[in-house]
Length: 110
Image (cartoon, rainbow, N blue to C red; front, side):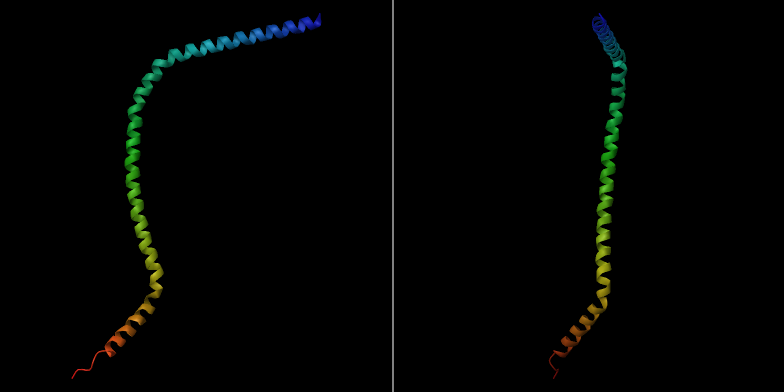
């Protein structure tokens, strides 16, 4: 008889769980239907704001991309100058040597 009592307890617990689950699903559906107009109104109000946010993000991205390109060019010029600056004395010696060789190659004036 105890096995039958345990089975009955399991059956009634399952039945109670099913009733609670069904009630929860019905309340959730009713809650969703009651709040549906408010959700639609909120989405209609938020849609233009989201569009404006996207437009502002697009413009800011364009401006920041332009600033990034200018910064990359300035950085590249600075890097080239920083690398070539130590070579200036050597370039000066090469220029003086070239000028002296060119000056000595001229034919003598008669």
